[in-house]
Length: 203
Image 1 (tube, rainbow, N blue to C red):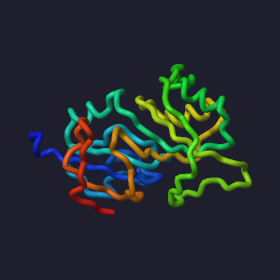
Image 2: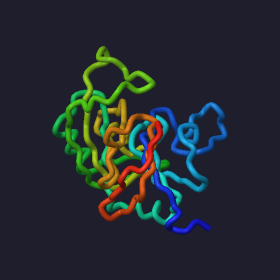
Image 3: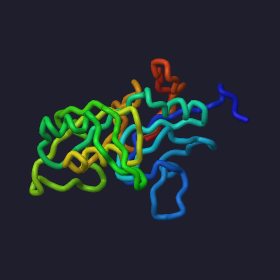
């Protein structure tokens, strides 16, 4: 049995094209274990879908994992979306839109959605479509829930499909300067202040 003091915690920048899991029945799929040798019992706190990038928290502490999924904790995403986003579209996303979750209609909770300048992320491994297909807009969208592919479904419901999605913050833990594929072991992922000094890193 792992005692609380023996638990280990990590933050990572999940690259595009990787599953947020350690094993997959399909050998051609890329999984987290091919990036870093995580200890037995490590689990992701929430998930990012295969096409999404950015901040992922991992821990060997199942109870802590459940606490960190609480709806009181904000998750902020930077979304590159198709088209010029109007004020009306932003208000629609912010106030809640109807999306489908496993075949059931669901109205998202109010959130914060604002236009932002291009954050200047390095190009991802699969090229985003170019300017010949029309303009695009970067948004910051902050939610307190985490339904399957929720951000993508929200922007699509407002008429602006997501082209690239990067999670940049969970609570007060930020992606910062972590590069795609980089993993850092941290002392804790405590909810109170999310104080997580870096103690080890590997790219």
